[in-house]
Image 1 (cartoon, protein in one colour):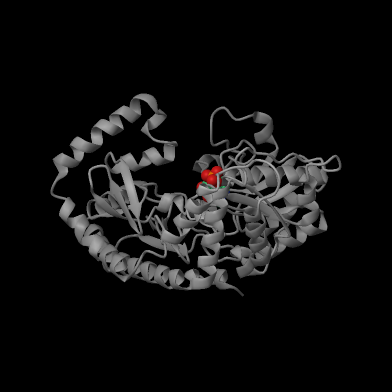
Image 2: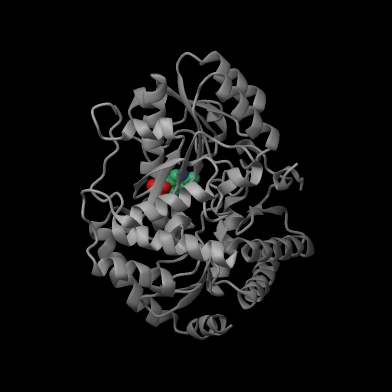
Length: 455
Ligand SMILES: Cc1ncc(COP(=O)(O)O)c(C=O)c1O
């Protein structure tokens, strides 16, 4: 039985000071956002970032610790944290100093071995149970792409099984059935126009936490299945706690049929634990993808796992898999990763973040109850979400359907007015970093008390 089986400051004052000056804020923000909209689709890099505009145009200029500052000088306590990578806080002195030292020695050599890549790879091998060998890249999507290519090469099979509500990046193999509408649940639902139908066709989907369904698919497709991929704790829909029995069944059935099991720990790796969720649940996959918190915001990611799978990418005549990338293993990212990992381990960052996360969750849950607001608080360790109009512990994507999006928008807008920033997307999540503290907690709960009273 693991944790997952359970059911059910100063910155703050400055935020208040800034609120009066709304016309100045608009004067400074609108010109830059307008220029962006002329030449950048949606006005921001990726549509999801443009969602920040849903609660009023915003352009950010700097960040430090737990604080985000706009071009107009407004300051927010940041719960978005760049979609999760910032685990130690923005502009972390030691991480940035490590990256700067690497920059001083040249950012990219593009040939041979660098001592830094060995040092970071050794740390991953030591810390993450499934990792025997490692290839670095720059993003989570690259890592899942490489993992699937390694699995296809090893098995000679084409199909991949993924789970509804799990996000594994933007590429055609996996951007399927992440947020299917209610009437498309159970189908292969492409999340984007322009995807290759053959890729979507080869991506099978099943409900998360449904051991029988997954087992049946793996058995039925044992001749053509290349991989099973999942977020062991799906955070792309807030938080679904996995049943230990589900993860164990996946491990057993994939082992029996020789299908590589891929844990996408892009969010969870180094955020929930230096050992990943796999270390928490004692289920060891064949391949693991890590990114985000690995480098505290620097573009660094990795695919690691069984050495026979990774060795396929050795780059010699015997190795058939090509893994390449001009910027893979770039030195500032690796230096940031080494410093981030060492800090997380030395300071046992997850212990304090888990405690703080519990207090945010408990405080929010109490407020929902006090105000008679229909909703629930979900999360794990340093991640939490408030979901309106739904109750009970969500275990599958369908349990997340039907949440009250309007109410979440209103909550996000009210919290933003009071200096607390998170994306107004109701399926996303709040993140905490080592820079968040007691004062932030108090201020957040005080603001939430007011906003929930008004909802
Ligand atoms: C679980 C998971 N996997 C993969 C990705 C893709 O990572 P990236 O955006 O770095 O390509 C993400 C991004 O949010 C993610 O949350």
